[in-house]
Length: 138
Image (cartoon, rainbow, N blue to C red; front, side, top):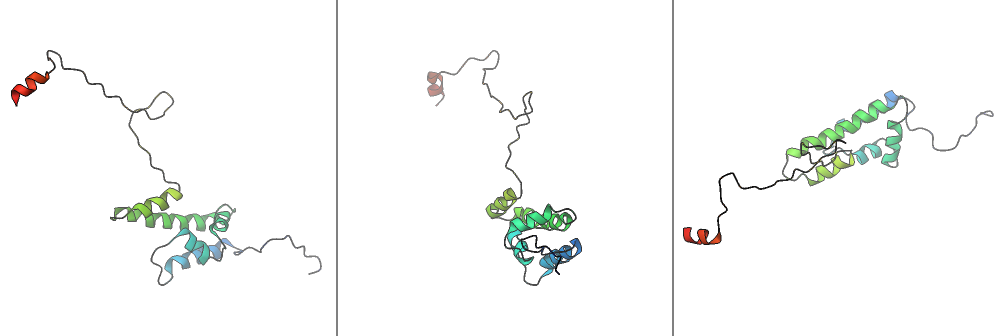
């Protein structure tokens, strides 16, 4: 005990990836869990906020259980896109890295989307209809 050095900070919540994996699985199998969330997972695991969860995701040896759990939450929201009210799901998925993207199918030389231009031209051998002709048809 005399030679121990206090490195500061809080001791790790999980010593091994196996402990973390078990705790993550417990979150999803707990009785009464209806809607899994990132914040709910972080709190269940004993973290003060979700940034601590992300730190474990980036910690060597601990990333798999966290990434798998985050993917399960993403799956929950993705599957909910078939419901009537999807605004909250879309918001959650955007926070998970999803993006609204319009693809035109047309790109410039740099690979950026280009909006097509529609140019109306009269067909060959056709003359424009005048307002007098329109009135005569009515």
